[in-house]
Length: 305
Ligand SMILES: C[C@](O)(CO)[C@H](O)COP(=O)(O)OP(=O)(O)OC[C@H]1O[C@@H](n2ccc(N)nc2=O)[C@H](O)[C@@H]1O
Ligand SMILES: Nc1ncnc2c1ncn2[C@@H]1O[C@H](COP(=O)(O)OP(=O)(O)OP(=O)(O)O)[C@@H](O)[C@H]1O
Image 1 (spheres, rainbow, N blue to C red):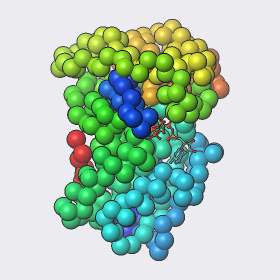
Image 2: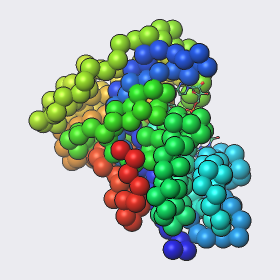
Image 3: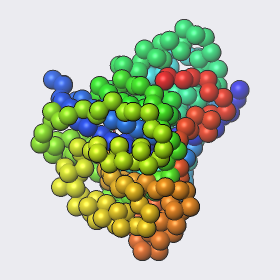
Image 4: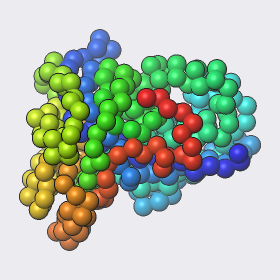
């Protein structure tokens, strides 16, 4: 295969409990994540050297050099697999950067998926080595990368490497970013209490409303420190909660993107239209959260969970 296009969906932390801190400073998490049909698109083309180009509505400020997480992940992949050959990457950036929905991590995971898909990892031994990278090099590169390798709903523990798939109903969702970049380390630093309670075991949800009711009892422990860093997040949450049909409004990751859940896609779409009119300066995108594996690559070559 000489060229391939891979979807890099937005990752949403439906709940994010911080349960401790390791000696190296990294925080222990217990999070429920799901993936959106909104995302970036990464194209890979066989080439003489590794290279990177970035375009799209959210490309501004995203590095197109070796500091891009796509090239960093590809370099790690090559080091660990001994892959011969190189790839020219083109990234269409649709997700705002530094926004708590895993943009860079999802792009990096798409690079790994794409390299495997292009045949650089056909041998089972290579896939085993890539799986070995999850607990180590890939998590150090970006704690959100392992969960983005297989974009399905998961419970995520450890610092981001301990993954358990979970069944969730499709969740009609509106994502909103107030166009404020939030630095993840600053938010973790501002978190006062590190040893919060873990998630209770997620039950099997019979209905969407049961799922939303359960999520409403959980938390994002980074929400308060993120609001202290960027007070506009509180305004976003109030605005979302007041939208007709909103069943739950919460922040994702370390912010500033927040999400609202609705009973139907039509209600989520109507909310997006209303919000675009009221807040044209905010980024917003409606889409039902669900299994994004089929959209992520032509065939599900590599299922981590
Ligand atoms: C907040 C989350 O988005 C939840 O999914 C992630 O934990 C953050 O994932 P990420 O953006 O990929 O974060 P990284 O780029 O790996 O880490 C940025 C910084 O966040 C802090 N960090 C990150 C993950 C973690 N479990 N504990 C941390 O304390 C560390 O200071 C780290 O240097
Ligand atoms: N492919 C990429 N897309 C976006 N940012 C990138 C990328 N590669 C490197 N970066 C750098 O990483 C920084 C963090 O961006 P990213 O979109 O990964 O945000 P994030 O909020 O840390 O995501 P999350 O916390 O949800 O994982 C950006 O400021 C940018 O300079």
